[in-house]
Length: 245
Image (cartoon, rainbow, N blue to C red; front, side, top):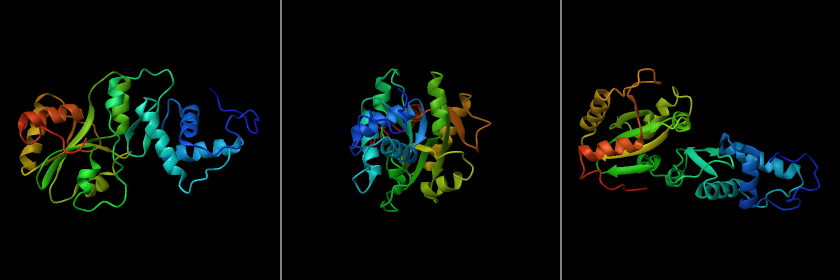
């Protein structure tokens, strides 16, 4: 379905402010098959709607309307959220699978009002274990998207540890060398981060999964699922149940 021309009197939402359902329909119309950041969706939908005769948003924060629309689209398989602030709008013909339904909404790295002590945990999609230090896995969303398009179940992932420096500081430093914002998929809380990190690196290296041409060190061809499976193998009592889905 192609966007209608300017001043098209047949625009079905003429004179109506954009509700979440209208936003969802226009998002699919304008961005199907694309990976776009949320702000581009906000601006694109609002401009298209008003340009074609729709009433401007009547809410003070139109971004919340778009967030609601995207969340609804994700539930029914019309969109995926591979990274904080980025949305992949699926074509109408895409096959919706249980794998799509199981992907949890990543918590935005730049969401405000989070205490310093809990910020690392909030950054991650899944948190396992307890302890003052951590071992984490993050990846770039484009790596996962390309792997899934090829039907592959692993992609380059960074496995590191956060002990003296909080994870948010590690990510801020890494951001200068990375082409996009990473997804922090898993955070393992532990008292033995050095030993646990070494175990991950050793096993994955022995399996021939170390990535030599990644942006930095400690990258491996793996996935969050494999990472969690290894964690449970190393210490099943500590990493059996996630603290936050």
